Length: 468
Ligand code: CA
Image 1 (tube, rainbow, N blue to C red):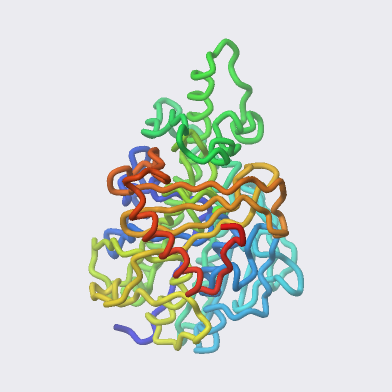
Image 2: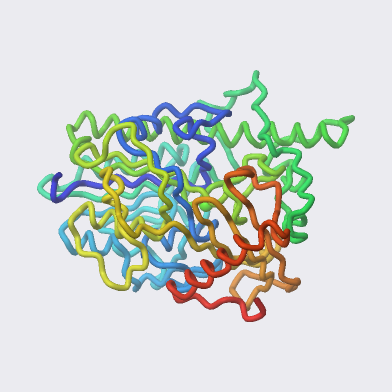
């Protein structure tokens, strides 16, 4: 194994694993993303510790949970004096660059640090003719489509790099974030087909927490003009309108994913043409998952599987067997120590994640965690109405506590609501439609999961909600 491999870290925004054919998608094909899986490992239980953009990005960079790095919500910028693993790579001699979405704040205290070069979208950025903020050129606008432009910037930087040093390139796509605006090349893709509906599309949510039943992420909550780019046809029944909304939504989502797939193909081709594929760790992930009509929803935030799971494909021919997969639980906090480990760079003590590099190589880690901790802080953001909650997911079960309180977090709002719980048996009920919390049969597992939750909160230094 090379002691100083290159890194190409490609992260999209809101790309759910069930919209990659490598993960068995029933709704699209991603042949170029699948090249990463075919040449490396598909991780089947990679989870974010807070399913929302900025907090997940902060956990990836810092290797810490959000109550430690301070990025609990979308309204909490990343303090750019904090250590990130890109700082460590730079200190160890890697050339580093970031292109695309940053979304962790702007200005002297929040602009990217730990990168030799960066060129990022302000805030969410635009799909067409986007403005960039550039570490060398300031505010800069070029015509074109955002996913193509970010890839162009990545390849330009690679071609101008110092070939005597290893590189770590961060390619952070805006797509497929809302409002899902395709490029001309994919504008009419799927026009003549019906996209399959998910199994839980008509989930009535009976038995789930009241606050979950009330979230505003239903097809009827999509804006016809900005999200669906059309007016609702007249004369539809309610069910017909919901179906029509899903088709409008999911087709644009998949069209912008198709552009990501094409551009990932360009990056992989460039590595092949420059004889760098063998020496380069290629990562494809997304900051979290997304509901693709599952449970009748769009968006993320909740601890349900479609939102919790991150796609994670890693190719590194010198260490990872082609076409392999992994069932062990890994979380976004583990990414930083893992990549440092693969590069032979020391992992500081304060990092809370653990390196799963041995697992990538087909090895075992005797005490590898069998449970993960999750916390969503942004109670009732004023738009999606998702309640604050935390929970534990094991290999077989998930316990969620909706503590339902904004706790004065920036961007979180009232009102506080009574505490509610959900418990799912993921083996018997993988679609999470049967909340068994409070049933006599679940008493023993509930006790076990409550102890796990308390243990994880103590381990990571998070405070349980006082009234729980
Ligand atoms: Ca996101």
